[in-house]
Image 1 (tube, rainbow, N blue to C red):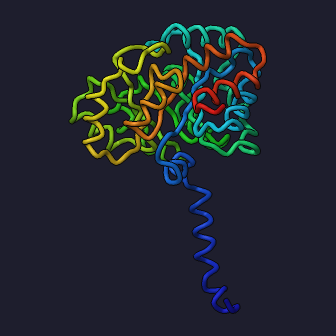
Image 2: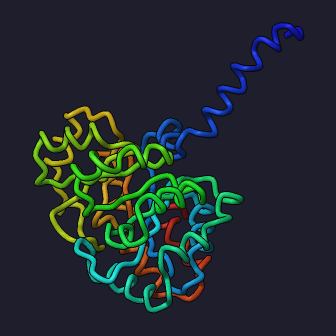
Image 3: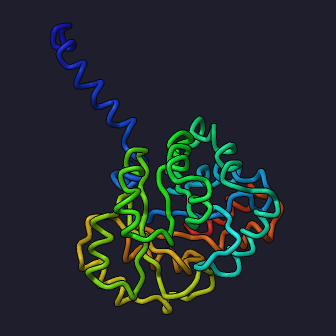
Length: 281
């Protein structure tokens, strides 16, 4: 390319680079990988107050595609006993949203995969939703999962604020969600749709046959615009592999927290757990 041609192409190159820098990492993930996506949830400040960043590094190092960082809350409604207990311990350790943002301030110097904050809306209201979104953008958070933020309230009052800060707000569906509601959620959603596997609280221990196969197949046939990840009850290679047959991937939370609870060797535990899910021997 001669100089004149290069000069003509330069603005286009800059525009493309700027677009790549602005593109949400969740979108980048689903553009490059469409199946067997592994997302792992853990509670910030658990098992120890300053373990959060180390766990993130270890999860990425061992091949996790996406990480959901739980915001501990004293009165959870959708969580089973394992995550409830981890939140209680994290709060006793001193974890809160401001401290979490401080811990994550340099995370993008070393971590490349998408990061999501997941929790209940009350702590976010207390923190201030606008400040929360700004802080997420500053530290490099790519999305949020706030199950008790009403869809209409999000769409009317906060959707543009999230969009302004390049944040995807991931919405949930269940086997009981009507088709009209699912299509509304799909229209408003960005990033992916969180498919709750069954009408229950979070928790490991379900068997493959416990999942609603007809529900999974029904959603597949709807041809939704958003990719989908299945969560609640995914606990091992068998349940992960089964979920991946019906969605782009799956989310594991309680089983991972149980593993962290039962071992003091953090880095070794993370590696062993992820390799077990991926069936790496």
